Length: 56
Image (cartoon, rainbow, N blue to C red):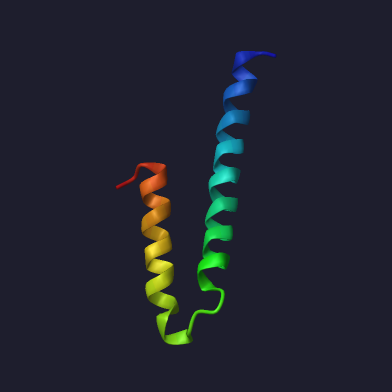
């Protein structure tokens, strides 16, 4: 395969994997969570996703 075509495929694939992981983590974290705690849970999930991506 041409390297010029591989890099966009890798970038798009990695973004899709990170997005899917974030959605799954949020769904698992919010399961059986009281409504008053959901904002804190989502903030913690966002911190985890940022840490995994290396943004913090």
